[in-house]
Length: 310
Image (tube, rainbow, N blue to C red):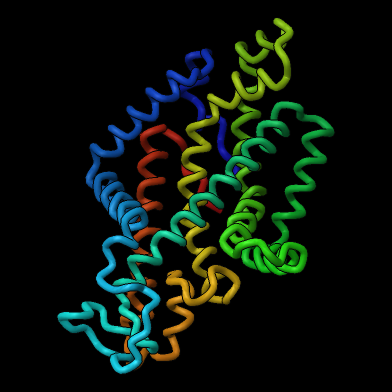
């Protein structure tokens, strides 16, 4: 997955570096452009609803999400339980609402960690070039050879043995960050390579500016649009990976109301209470679709090529 040089064409044509103020203005203008399209408005609304539910979920649940009510287990939708109850009599709607928080914040923090690591590695590799670039990219290629889910399972199992007291949520966050760093770094490296030969970067080098200053004050602001799109794309993958780990029993543990865990607990009873397994799956699907649409909107607003999210 490579970013073409044309991804940064608006900045390159001006020959001027981005500044934090220009980056903030670009973000505001980008959001305005996204909201001008029907797709952008729908995507923004979907994501906003999920964010609000993640923040307020525990306060708007009609019932305690972990409370057992065995006499009412396997109940279908009723006036009291809109989505029915699961195999332990817990209210499905309450568990879906409460489960939003864990999966959203775990995926978001994991994505931030992965994109941050990838940006540091990518900018460093792109700026130094030569043997340094080759060594870093061979290290990245080694990670890319391992599927994300397999790498996640390895990291979690190894971390559990070494850090038995560490909360499962932080293990998943660490896993997502490590799993997503390689792809992120390759994308950011390509963008940094397009910026490196420009006049303002060379001028900074001739002025004797420190390497750190050039990398993070001259190059980094100009690749932020690419970072934003990459973060949005990776967030949807992070949500699916978090849910997948929960389904496999490697994420948040019972009795927490994680969406992946809910599907794992209830798919055996899908014939009796289909909504207990389908509701968290549909909630996940709507959030991933909303984020993907929003990522497309960001890319179009910034005039960036489609990176494919691979």
